[in-house]
Length: 59
Image (cartoon, rainbow, N blue to C red):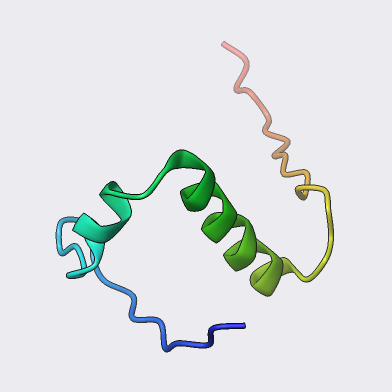
C-alpha cells in the first residue's frame, strides 16, 4: 500500500499532479477514489444515508 501525505487545497489551486490524473484511464481514477473512500470509511460497502427534515412556514 502506498502511504503518502495528503495536502488539502482550495478549489482552483490544483496540485501539480492534477495533469497526471487527467492522463489516467477512468478505471484507474475510480480505483484510486475507491481506495481513498475505504481509507476514510473503512470497509463499509454502502454509502451513508443523509436526510434533513424541515418545517415549511404556513402562509
